[in-house]
Length: 119
Image 1 (cartoon, rainbow, N blue to C red):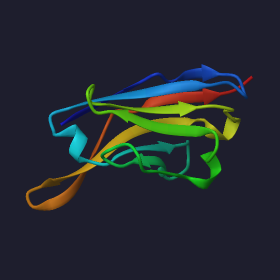
Image 2: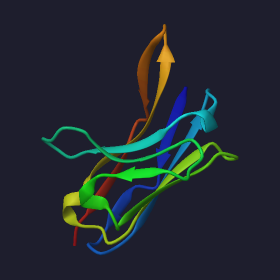
Image 3: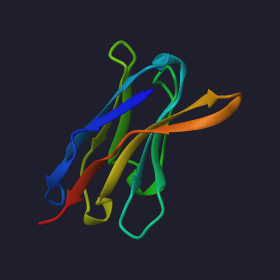
Image 4: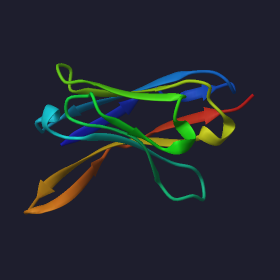
């Protein structure tokens, strides 16, 4: 299983970024995909999740209306469109999925991509 994030960077408040996560090594379309983030000194938090078909999504309250998660099952890729970014969105953003390993649930994580919102 491999998850590779890209698209992070430095953006001014109010700006936008689109993160991508390219997945391989498993049946991508069969699993929920998620984006989480971790800011310095804080615990990792779930930001958004999308079900297998892409029609059902869920969001952290603080990003509702600003972030949109989507997936392209033909490309084995999940996206996070982030608009109206705020300084408090600054964090390392991680892509993840939960599969089964040795009969137990196991969460696979990407290496993360840094998002910095600053003027």
